[in-house]
Image (cartoon, rainbow, N blue to C red; front, side, top):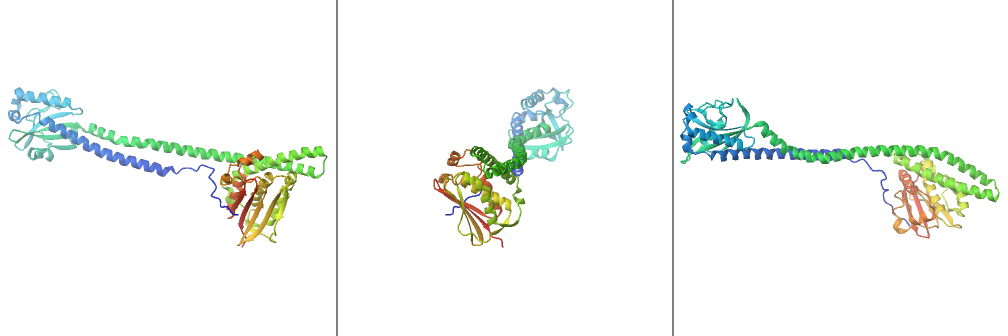
Length: 449
């Protein structure tokens, strides 16, 4: 029975591609700022125009016509009343610097009255010619429409001006009312509106930058952790291997029963520790991407399986398990790959088969060729893998509940490492299992061409 398995789960969190996301957020913020600025400009200009139109309605054509547009108006009560109202308009509209009335005297545009006290340097006496009158200002005397001018600079400063005609009861334009807003106040208001989208965009950008730095730091820590684990595992594996061989030699020398019991216990514990160290080391190698550095040589799978059988022979005997070469093996089974890695991959499976099989049972090891590939089958009659757990056992860091009850130790990485090694050899790993009846693992590798 063949059961397909999915791609292994990622065990290392990848660095997020945050540069593009940051660029998108910034672009959205800039677009939002541009739209907000455009809207603020329109709103500000509409407000200035509305102020000018409203202020123009405070003056009648009759009182404008009562003015002489010269020094005689200084003692004119109507002029004084108009001037007081212009001062109120300036003071009552926040940000307004000047309020004034202008008229035409011949071809000249002249001041009729303004909001400034006579002592001010910006005061314009009645009848003073305004030589910097623009064509837009002059047009208001004829077109009957309020306009916004500026920002524009004259001898008084740089302004945004609202200009509205003042008409008499017959609809004749008798003056133009103007209010001036300093350009810096105008730009400040626009800036405030424009900066809000950028500030809002800065929040997710700050979060993205923080996450990027955090991800980078996590990646660096993960690399240091993996390097440490690799070094520690290497340092542990050598003495453990030496101890295991030494104990194995002592056991073969036929010691007394009491000694044999102690040595067997030592052997099993050292073997378990060595298996765990090997799994951790294998994991650290693959986590660092060293799988691309596997050796590419001609390997006979018969030799690999025979080496593994010898390696696990003592453990099998201690557990009352018989390792059996099942079926007729090919005379040779040549593949291209890494002898050590393939040995590790198949050793993980055979080790599990021995570990979870009952005493007196067999672990069958088969090898046959099939459509240009060699298939290794390793079958046990042990505890099996519950159906609902079968999708998890190849994912890494996972052991089925029934396995943890039988053997307390184990990292859950052995089968995951095996799958990675097999896939690096362009092979396939799958299994069939029934709880309490056993498991059969299959490894298919392309034959050497």
